[in-house]
Image 1 (tube, rainbow, N blue to C red):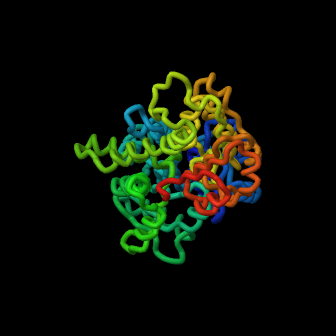
Image 2 (image 1 turned 60 degrees about the horizontal axis):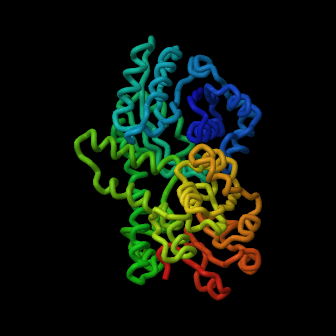
Image 3 (image 1 turned 90 degrees about the horizontal axis):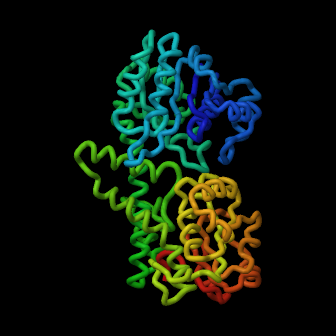
Length: 452
């Protein structure tokens, strides 16, 4: 089949390369000419395991193409995917300006019956808006469907190739048949395709992400309670997970969720609910708990290294002015260089504001984090911030080491070496990755999240 994908971000690039790998002729469109040229050479703008190889292979096989010309890509396509950005507006709602602009461009470019699919995460009712925008300019028949993505960053290629479900939101049987034909090679082993109306498909994506975010915030709240009553959250988590009705996924406490999906989608579905006259009080709390959780690790450092000083401030003098803090992990999760809404940003900023010198390391997200922090943190604070290629170099001379992202290469460090290079051996484990008894036997000070 001939497919066009508008947008070469995370979703569009994975979907375009994935469909091409199953033998389809795919053309991805982006308005950034420089980005298009780099993609033609097989250069990937994001870090996602397996994606670079997938793109390069299908470009070489001449099944995957990149262009800035929408008419060229859309004019001959049977299916067109809209995978452009839907950033949060100031009120938390999703900004659909890029989606609707793409819809109008598609409407002007289609030359025959075409199925137009919203792949971007969009709020309830977007399919109707896209349909209306296309109808204003289209001169041939078309159909609009919702096909939300369920890709995990760090495992997106595998998720696309072996989806646990494919949701097709469409009321037009002709369009559904086209999309089922497209997805047939991906769901051959069993029937994992669910056909719904467009509104149900749109809400399913938000509901799924909001529920996972709720589990994370619930466990973070439980972890903080564990610290106050003397329980160990690891034992509590395991006990909960043994209940088949609950399961053990997304029950790991930490420093809060981040990334491009959960924070944005929780806010967007809350906005939709308020507009519908039914505020989602649970999600209001989920959002508040997550914001609070991003402060927890920095607050632990303050209490340890500046005892007696009020954590909240205001401070007559910076309480951590003579302290060096090492940060291991800047991406919002392992397996990606995505730092959008990453807890590390909140932690680093708070430590800098408290006067600390911060030395950071991440296996792949150093460049993206440096770009983010330079645009969000005052320049005078950044004079005390540095990024280091080597994890141990970041920890050299530190009064505390904070593990923020649990990259596998940071799970079993050489603690004996750390003991010799750190100024004072304090470990703050934001992911409960290290075993408290092991590091305490080596005379490290250790604090996790909800651990005894």
